[in-house]
Amino acid sequence: MKQVLLTALFVCTAFTASAQDSSDQLFTLKNGDVSMTINADKGGKILSLKYQNKEVLSQSRWPESFGSTFWTSPQKEWNWPPVPEFDKQAYTVKQKSESRLTITSPVSGRLNLSVGKDFQIDTKDGAFIITYSIKNEGNEPRRVAPWEISRVSNADGQIFFEVVDSIWPAGLMSFETEQGASWYKTDEATQNRKVNADGRGWLAYAANDLLLVKRFQDLKNNEPAPGEAEVQVYVNRGKTYIELESQGAYTLLQPGEQLQWTVRWYLLPADTTNRKDLLKKISALPAIGQE
Image (cartoon, rainbow, N blue to C red; front, top):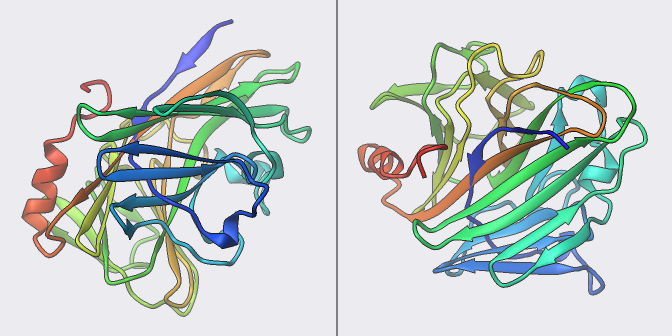
């Protein structure tokens, strides 16, 4: 079977009572001071990402507001709510060890697609490597793109990334340009807001003396799915939570074919007030294809 390969990278945390119960299959991977807990029974979500005892991911009790999940793109193909087979139903465990977990979703009868998630640790540079797969389970060719969504608390933090051209819609969120990157300081919104950008293969969040970095494939401006983007930031109304979103290339899959897309996450202690130092830490991390 032919595989279409794409690429991205990642590092993780712990769990919350709002996202699991006593019967759930919970798996924790550890890499040094960082731990990641995944709930295979609830959409294969990453429930928690911790450096020692410091949590980075949102632990909200509201649906679609906690942890890190994975969807297919473009959203217009399923609108809302998220596809239950990918976001909420139980994943089948294919492989598990102290350093690796591989799980697969049920097939979506609506989309004729299935999702796989492979979690591994890289002790060399402290990363967690997540390889997502999307398989065409139908009888017709399908175009689809991978999409990772990670919720963080709307605390006194900042989100930043490099931008090739512009952030759109313009003026919807207040970004500053400094040290060659675009920076958004978290604030309280009276409405939901979302922006898009053609980035440079990374997206970062700094808060509570921690730096979360996502490394993924740097897309050309014509590679995302229609109406979507390589980098997206969503801010929920009120001072509740923010979504860090990244997408891979929009890919044609023949029946039985699958794509793979890797995201590499890092969670590091950092002086979150020093923007120059934050960018220096990111530049020291290998880009996708250079690890």
